[in-house]
Amino acid sequence: MATTVNIVCKRTVVSTKAIEPGKYLPLSVLDRFMEKNHIRMVYYYQTSGELELGKLTKKLRETLSEMLTHFPIVTGRLLRDDMGHWKIKCNDAGVRTLEAKAKGSVEEWLRNVDREKELELVYWEDMLEKPYYWSTFYVQV
Image 1: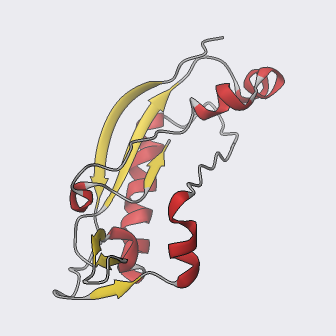
Image 2 (image 1 turned 120 degrees about the horizontal axis):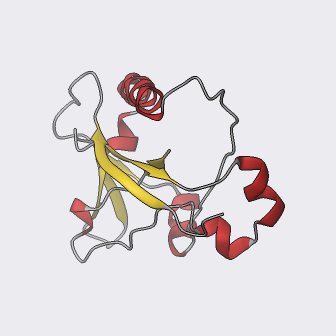
C-alpha cells in the first residue's frame, strides 16, 4: 500500500449566483481565538466500484457550488481591518477542490493508519504573504 497521496487535479468551485459586491463580515470572537489553530478533518466513505472518480468529483463540485450560494462567507478571502483583526471579504473567489489518489482500500488504510499517515490525506497550504489570494477552505476527494 502506498504511503503517499498523489494529487490528480486542483480546481476552484464557485457559487451558482454572484456574490453581493462590497460585503464584508467580521470574524467572531471564537474565530479570532482560533486564529492560531487549524482544523484538518478526514472523512472516510465507502463507494461501490461502479462509480468512476471523475463522475463522483463532478457531482461533488456541482453540489458544493449550489451550497456556496447559501453560504457566501465560505467563498470569501481574508483581509485585516483597521484594528488588525481579520475580516472576510465576500466575493466569488470560490473554494479549492483537489482530486487525489492513493493505492489500497479504505479497510487497508484504516488497519495501518497513524496520525502522520492520515495527515498525508489532507492537503495543506500555508497562508501566503498576501492572504487575499489564499483559500480558507479546501475540499479533497
